[in-house]
Structures are given as structure tokens and as C-alpha cells.
Length: 230
Image (cartoon, rainbow, N blue to C red; front, side, top):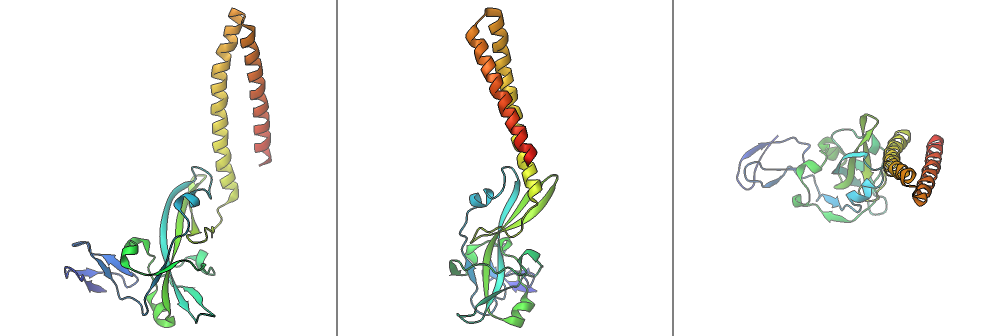
């Protein structure tokens, strides 16, 4: 499929599943055969910081906001949103996104790569208004492999649950590393103080070392006991 840039007239080769693209010569945005009816875009209601907090620290490798196309059919009393992606997304087969703050779509609202390609055959068969709904595509690091998770950009709902055992394991490893660092720092400080207290007979330093060692032992006991239950 070919279209001409409305600004510089250059001919562009595009996929029919694209909604719009950016001209590589003059940087203009070009609409590609807009489906019947004016498309709508739903505003993002949750932030990337909110999505980050859904997962343990250090687990999120990457995050992208994508707009997924749905077809809105029916009247005001029986509206239905039907997925119309050119490629299958099993997580969204039976998912119907919530209503959000809609605006009439304008190509300045998003970059071409942020919009998931549409299934134009389905658009022609069913008709209806095209609605672009935001989702965050989050890549997670889980014990040596990556896994993608979808988060609704309006409700903040996680659509695909990652393996909780892997998440708990990653979180436990981070906690274990933090504890070991704290333990080593404590020993690095307490041992010299103990040796100094013996040589100079500073009884108060000896007491501090004794109390500090006891606290470290108690903390270590509860840490490994709690980790054993997980």
C-alpha cells in the first residue's frame, strides 16, 4: 500500500494495518486510510511510577505504553468493545477495557510506534468506531529469563500474572544481599572495637561490642526464619 505525504508529496510504502506514520523526509504525520467514523483515544490515568510499584525493586527491565485498537459497536445502552489487532494478544481475547477519558484522536497525541497495528479486515466486516486504549507492556526479569506483562493504563489492573514464586525469589535474593552487606559492615566495625577494648581495657567498648553482636545474631535468626517460611 502506498500513500503520498500531504506536506512534501513524497510517496511512502506502508502496511495497511498502520493507522498513521511519520514522513522520513519532512517529519509530517500522515493518516493512512482512517476507518469510518472518527477514532477516539482514551487518556492514560496511571503513571509509570505506579506501574513500577506493582513489582519488586529491580525486576522491571523495560516499560512501553502502547495503544491497542478496539471497535466500539452497539448503541449507548449496549456498547461493546471488540479487539481488532492485526496480531493476536491472548491476554486481551476476553478482556474489555474500562471506560476512560476519551478524546477525538489526533495524530499529534502519539507516535506511530505507540499504536498497535489494526486489523482492517475486521474493521470492514464489523464497522463501528475505533477506540485506542492505553496499556503498559512491561518486561520483567525472572530468574534468568524475561516475561512480558500487560497493565491497563486506565485502571492499573495487571492482566497477566507473573510467577509469584519467581517474584518472591527475586525479592528474597535482594533482601538477602542487603542483609549480608549490613552484617559485613557490622562485623567490620565491631571486631576492631572489640580488639581495641581488650588491649586498652575499655569496658564500655566491650559492652557495645557484646550488645551489637547479640543484636546481629537476633536479626540473623529472624531473617532466616522468615525466609524459610517463604
